[in-house]
Image (cartoon, rainbow over all chains, first blue to last red; front, top):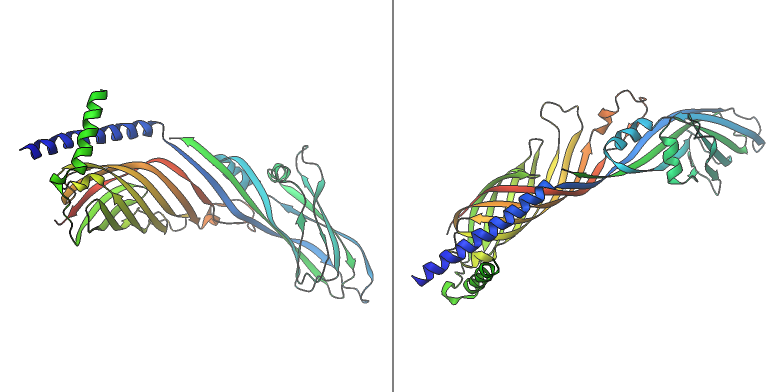
Length: 189
Length: 184
């Protein structure tokens, strides 16, 4: 009898405790929230840069060759910006590719220009040869992430200036650029 | 109010420590459970009480409309030390996944899959053995992955390729509710 009474009392106490927890959690649900980070790891685009004609003589210094390429990652940035704040952007890949050897390339300088007044032409990336790069030159981005984001919010034009010795076969350059965009979300439900 | 709380706590402590309800050790009890919740979806699983009733594990097959998944839950139910108590509060840690899937009939749209960790507090209505109903609420940490995100590019340049975005973060609150039947 005493045991049953005790069980009953404990049961009542448990229900009260449980109800208190449920009520507290229900209250918390009214101020529910979601905090998250969103990451688009690689929005990539590849464009044709242009051609360097073949030279009949190997090892002849090549006059600086200039190429331009146009990219537009603004739609991707906007889509992520629609759902996330505190955006950051990083150029995860900036390469010049060719179907032949690019050992003849000694230096590449890249500038970027946006299509708005606050995105004038500015140094963007560079490459200095320190060995045979094979069929792909990876250009190192020098611009800081905040400035990169400002430019990527608009269509951009990259201007490549290539220095080196004249290749003995025709070179058709393509340019690939990949962007990693991330942002944070913190919303009440 | 303080007196009520003190009395309840004292009774609870007494009940748990009392020899009058010595724990009934047993080799293994099994059962099954069904529940629904967010983010796990609908779940059907096997419940195991290994040796003691206050620890249980549940392995479930889940479905969230998009695709199947799985979930493993480990529950600590200290009030199950008294198997005759028809109610209890417990803690439940659930880890699970939902395989990547798309809305049925729309395989051209981006897909969604996720892993999650639920840290729940719950209320058990019913004895730990036999039939009981559980209500569980708490925070969830999720890692969401997508697939075929390229399909959202729309009018962007055709050469633009998009990677599949990921989302990592906390969602508060999430819940699960359902029943378990454990053969005594």
